[in-house]
Image (cartoon, rainbow, N blue to C red; front, side, top):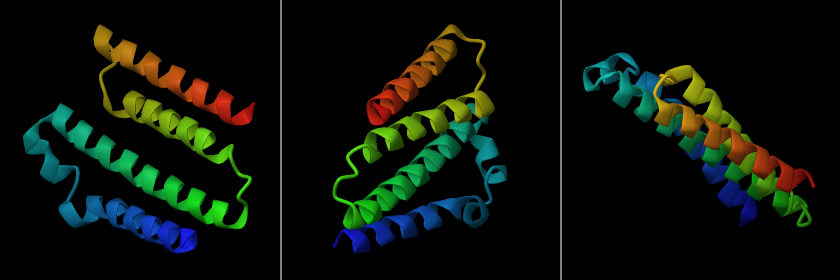
Amino acid sequence: MLLAAGLLDLGFALFHAAFWRLFGWPERLAPSGGLNSAITQTLNVMLSFVFVVYGAALIWQAGDPEASWLLPVAGGLFWLLRLALQLLWFDLRPLASGLITAAFALAAALHLLAGLS
């Protein structure tokens, strides 16, 4: 069951990765404004990441039930990716943007330390 669930999650990741081609992103998102376009694309990347990592974790744990470090490290990678997308698609000049960027960095560090300790 773990293997089947993991493979299904990976399939959903591939489906979400195709959104740029299927829906003509980012051009067709442009009328919603730069911020909405960035948010929509960020949410899709993050959801795709969750599907890949969760699917991979399920498949891995199907063969190694002792892999308790996997999900905290996956969480750290999630926050590192979110931090990278923040730097790529968002204006860092507003104070709120700087604060949320710092929060993403802190979340990445905490999760990675938890998984690697």
